Length: 390
Image (tube, rainbow, N blue to C red):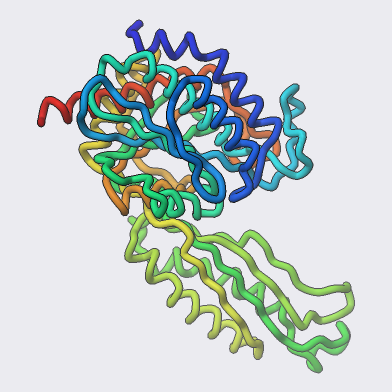
């Protein structure tokens, strides 16, 4: 076992303590105040200098033995408005809030990596910047940290996300587009209410909304190449107030995911055409709101190679380190770092069976040793390679 892996195992109990403390007290995006205080306390414990960011989050920095390049490691820290049903002894104590995406473990792994890096400062040149980022779930946090200087002087940023349902300890990198762009749309349809026995006297918003759900799917099936990965999902449809009334209003709420930046930027116009024409077909009026939330995450090719080489050093089985294909998954505002500079994102298998954003979501905690070791290893490998090149 190499030194970094051994150190990761030695700091595992502390990572578990941090993860469970954050899990008990999840906080929503932009309100991660207690989470920030706990992470700041961990930096104080380790003697790592940091500064708080606004409104929440923090940026810390560890200096190596000699001057050199600067690399950044990012972990997100916000939770979701989901009521937990895991029954875990450390389950959320905050009604209607839960760490259902693994951000508690991401933060704990970066704390573990900080402890490893502090123990290995004589082994690398340059500096490692630690980004404890708020508001990933709303797509706002990365931009906020970048605006507050997160990437100043940074040559490469590395990120990591747990992936539930995948083999525990499996660590994958990929080049190019590796996480989809995400948008949110809301549509309000206005018709005319009438008695259910006299539909001709009204304008049925429910009928228009139902047709719109179907017509939006034609974007994927008839306007996009089968080679493109595009998803259009209507997550909510609300219409009507009573069984015998033709509804005069309907509301749709949904998301679009894709791996092509051109498609991402073309979607608002495509939606506007389909929404307006469908509503007009059913004599309704429609109001569309379309928000491009997160860009396509495009991994730097050289950065992905560092991810893969570091993964081979820290996984328990060589076959667990892969250069993987993309698959439609959750978007991530780590894409902002890859647009503002160079970056590479990895995925770490977390086991269990319930998916992300489920009220039963959980992880196999021992995978945090792999994640912490990876963070430290990839940072040191990149910095030492940069020093040799210099």
